[in-house]
Amino acid sequence: MFQNSAEKSACYRPIVILNGETSVNQTDFIQQLPKVELHLHIEGSLEPEMMFELAQRNQIKLPFSTPEAIKAAYQFSNLQSFLDIYYQGANVLQHEQDFYDLTWAYMLRCHQDNVIHTEIFFDPQTHTERGIAFATVIDGIHRALEDAQQKLGISSRIIMCFLRHLDEESAFETLQQSLPHKDKIVGVGLDSSELGHPPEKFTRVFRQAREEGFLTVAHAGEEGPVSNIYNSVELLKVSRIDHGVRCSDDEKLVAELVQSQMPLTVCPLSNTKLKVFEKMEQHNIVELLREGVQVTINSDDPAYFGGYMTDNFLAVAQSHTLTEDELAQFTRNAINATFISQAEKQALMNKLDSFVAGR
Ligand code: HPA
Ligand code: ZN
View 1 (cartoon, protein in one colour):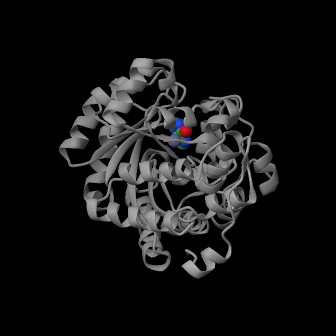
View 2: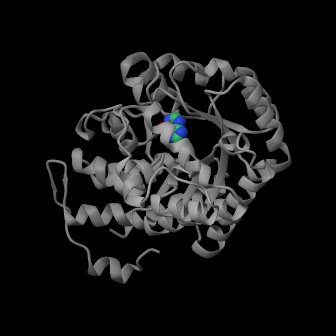
């Protein structure tokens, strides 16, 4: 996956950065930079071509006649307009092999993008509500991740998310269903419609999840107010905030995030597609990085938002002026924020350091 040092020195050229436009050298640097992804919904990596293929394989009728027609429908005005289409798309996933194929395709993309570790979300309720067994979903995803570790050398973890638009009882039921699979799941998260479904709705479920040994994360401050960030930290005891970009509405919160070193898993292309920011130039990720917030770059739902990890890095670098050190810092922050052992973190840090040193 990585070039050897002879190849590296042969293609070394000084870096040129012009007003946030990426030079050829910076594009190469971003492509080759070891990356760690911490915010990826596996259902959001379902490409239109695979959706079409699975619909045929499982004899499910789609309201589109071609993959191009599916892509043309991906015009979103906010989070809810995306979620409506996203849940519909997931209906083609029926069998363990479907979840395997979906996950394997994502891991191949990780390989192309030099992603060396990934922590992926799945939404059990999106599937169990349609009568698909919890085991069918987790076993397909887990088997693909094991193959990716063996064949591609990419390590990973699985986090299950509760859908916040559903009630507490459904989340408790899902937690119960996950217990026989605890060895395959490192943590629980909270996703779906943020407005109207604050973190406090799930305080008790998250408490029980922590008692079962799960780490916790939550989407907060994507579209919702800063109180959702505060309450995710205080009530859900999260180790990371997913998105969190609305923290800039409150200077005191930004200072607390810096002080506590709370990681934010930011998703630049998602944020512009869902109109959290009108333009990438207005995105606050670089400002937060320079203020000392532990921001990371992630792809969220790459099949819907127009790009995987490298695309997200490029989108930020094309709209902001960034040094190589700053680009590498996104990976450094992500490694520190992973849910792996200290020794595994050190191994990832060594990969990053040898890449940077070889430039
Ligand atoms: N926000 C909330 N829920 C989600 C998202 C997101 O960006 N992607 C998939 N489910
Ligand atoms: Zn998300």
